Image 1 (cartoon, rainbow, N blue to C red):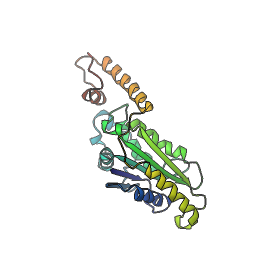
Image 2: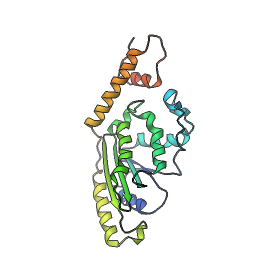
Image 3: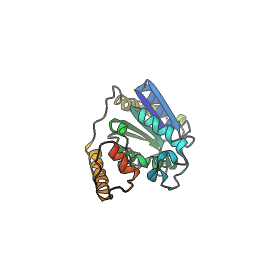
Image 4: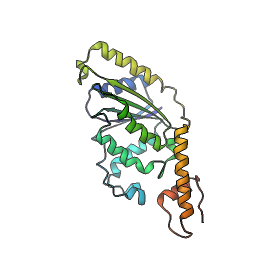
Length: 235
C-alpha cells in the first residue's frame, strides 16, 4: 500500500502521536509525508490562472504539485491535523484552495475516483465534526468517495505526555482499531454523492459546450472533459 500523510502541524504533540500510532498499525509499504505549514503553499491570490490557463502557471505550483502528485500516486490519503477554533487550520485550507482546480466542476483527475482517505483530528474538547467537514467536502469534490474519520477530545490538556496513561492507552486502542479498517485496502467504489456531483458538473459542461459557437475557443475545463471522453463537442 502507498500512503501519503498531510500533517496539519509541524509540532510533535497530540496529533503527531495519534498519527504515528495509526501508521505503526497500518505499516504501509510506501509512506510519503508532508508537514504544514512548512510544506504548504502561500495563500491563494485569486488570480484564476489555474482555471483560465493551467495549474502549472500558479505562482505556488512548486509547493502544490509535489503534494498533489503524491495524492494521485497513493492508495490511501491521510489528513492528520489539530482543530483550530472549531475548524481546520488555515494553512490546510490554503492547500485545499489550490486543489480547487481539480474539483469536479473544473478538471477532475480520474485517478482520484477510486481513492480512500482517512481524517484524524483532535481538539481540547470541542467537537471535531466541523473541522473534519472542511477536508471531507474538498475530498468528495476531488472525486474521493470513501472518506473515514476519527476525532479525539484530549480534555486533560494539550501536552501528550501530560495526559494520563490510562487515557492515552484508550486513544491508542481506538486509533489502532481505526487503522485496521484500512488494511487489505481495495479500490473504492463511487458513492451516490460523488456520482451526483459528477453528473451535475457533466450537465454544466455539456451546456457550456452547446453554447460555445463553432470555431470559438473553448475553455481549458471543457477541453479536459472532452479529452477524457465524458462529453462530446457540440457544434
